[in-house]
Amino acid sequence: MQGHPAANIPLSEGQPGGCSVRRLLALFSWALVLVLAWAALSLPSHSPGLVDFVHAELEHSGVVNPVTAVLLNFRSYDTLLEVGVLLLAVFGVWALPRERVWGAPLGAPVAGPVLHTFVRLLAPLMIVVGGYLLWIGAYAPGGAFQGGAVLAAMGVLVWLSDLAPLPRFSRWDMRMALLLGFATFLAVAGGVMVGGGRLLEYPRLWAGSVILLIETALTVSIACILILLFLGGVGEKRRATEGVREREAKQ
Amino acid sequence: MNAAVLYTLMGVGLFSIGLHGFLAQPHLLRKVLALNIMGSGVFAVLMATAWRGPQLPPDPVPHALVLTGIVVAVSATAFALALLRRIHTATGRASLPEDTAA
Image (cartoon, rainbow over all chains, first blue to last red):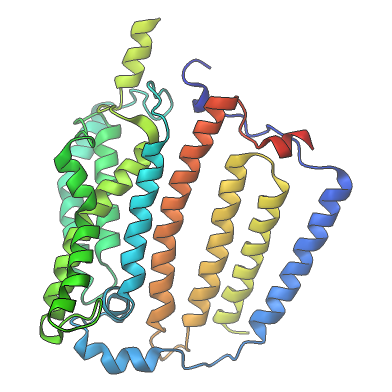
């Protein structure tokens, strides 16, 4: 197969260890199943957990959906760090040397008229769905991550069908878009301390608006981060077929 | 035997299958996949602990933890895949030297 070596990594490479090692591993795994199953089944079947605390405080959280209340109010520390992890993954991918040509299969010019028309119809719809998921997160399952994932999928679809080039992520405004979610979250987390509150302790009256502000910023950042992570080390390839064209020109 | 027990046992099974694959398979892509299967097992157990019977709404705290966990797993997988491609480009192999020598 022509193209980039990484495009075709044989899965059979490397042989699993010797027969006795494999037998030992299988034995260990079965023992693990039994021990874990025993531990899991010996847990009390009806523990109250933190449900009562969540429902008691739900009216002060600014949202109606208890999962969103936990994610962005009661345990927003988790979510703040989670966005940090997303950014760290992007930094990690960026820190690796860029590969100049990204060949088949993802960069192959597969886009026909059917895919073009379909993605044209789908893209605006996905923007609406992403926005809806962001908004509905306050009342029902949904939120910044779900909305951001739909928007990122739209970006990837548009890029793969070769409909439009992606924005250059090395541009400063695109970098700001990457940082927007984390920066907004951090600013709010610290900002509430000015008024005498504790870290991430939103004022009760404004909690709903604060959560919506954070989630909107997060949606934009998450969509950009997921697109970047999908692209991996592609660097400045703006069109899906760019790598293929370059390769063809070389031959 | 209710749904929660079934999901818990399924999660335990997935975790063990994933750990076995992670230890037994030398290919790095298989290791990354195995780690994801382990993660799915952990998420299944967490979701099962959130179940409180057919009438009551589930515990939102484990649900939120799983949502956070999924996002972290996705980003870690993306970084692992980028590292894998880099290792393959640099060495021509998709496994670690310790595994290849064995």
